[in-house]
Length: 117
Image (cartoon, rainbow, N blue to C red; front, top):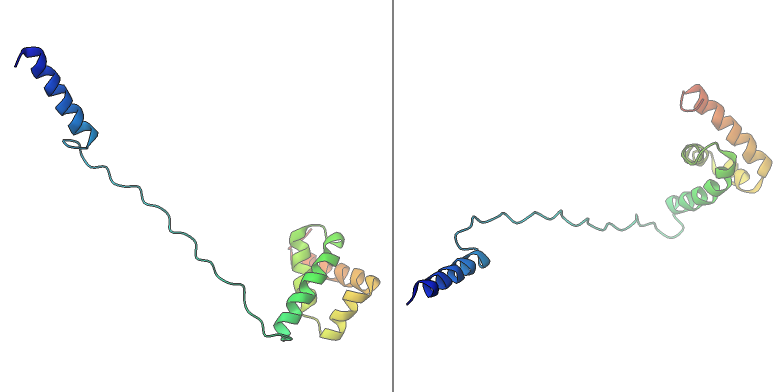
């Protein structure tokens, strides 16, 4: 075998070992972040009090949002209104003037607590 042939064989074996990882340190495989686990929304019994409050809250938030200075405060106010007895809660859903009064009242409470300016 001539000198040129030996060099070609030597190069090809070096390329082969580089290509297939021989003679090179193993690189650790990057860790993949675990996939988030899907959790189902809380289940409600049909007609349960929790389900009613959830539905009232969704309806009430839509009505409170234009009256509140921010979406964050609309969420706070909606939560406060959901603590009212059901008959008063229903008044807020049906009587716009009553709702405006309650939102103003809730904003005063939040202001007194330092949550809003």
